[in-house]
Image (cartoon, rainbow, N blue to C red):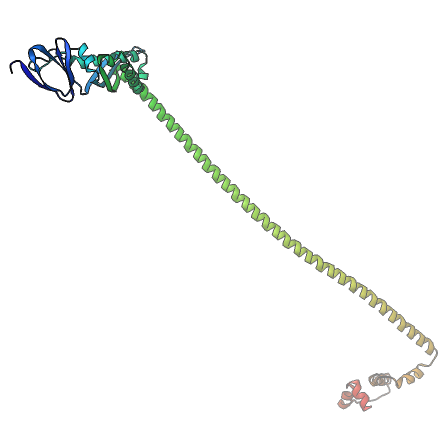
Length: 343
């Protein structure tokens, strides 16, 4: 049909049909015929868009910082975006303006505005250490009413891939960090050496304590042995004392017995002396021959023989020759009992 055209939109495309300046049809994935001379079509893509960015800003300590990242967004209010930017299609289906290609840059500009406010309030070292905090602050700024929502857009994701200083500053920071790392290495070496010294001291103390314990044990053993030896010596001394006391007691008894024997012998001798004295007093004045004759009957045969030989010896001057036969000597030397029997 002359002037009529057919349009078929994808599910990710929001289409608005205007007629006489008013929206007569709109939605996603629409399929319809329209009269081209009196209709205007607006096509807004709804798929998410990744917009990388990289720009330089100045930190609070006046250091140039390069921020690199990516923002992901999608159209959440197509009618709002259509009222702000031109997404009109030509008769051949192409866009009538370049606003579609300018939208990512406008989003990047919004991100840069939020980043600038954060970067200017922090030092370089804070920015290098706190990229997560940076992302959180920028995300909150973009989600405010005057952020992306004012363009009819929705923030899906924001990531800061790198925060880099300029090369000269980076080298200075690297030198500072290198020195800190070297200092930490030196501190670690010192701590390790200290720990080794402490461990060596602990080992020496343990060895010394072990030696002290061994010496104490040896001393206790020696003391125990000495006590045992002293106990044995004490027992031996006690036994010796008991033996000595027994000997002393025995000597005392022997002494008493000897004294008693001596007293008895003295008494016996006194008695014999008294008897002899009494006998001598009784025979005093009697002729010895008479006494000899009285003793002949009671004398021992050997005594008589001895007296006989004594008499012979006294009269040896008057005897010419005197022979003693062996038989006579044998009889004379026989025991007293045999002589008495023969007599």
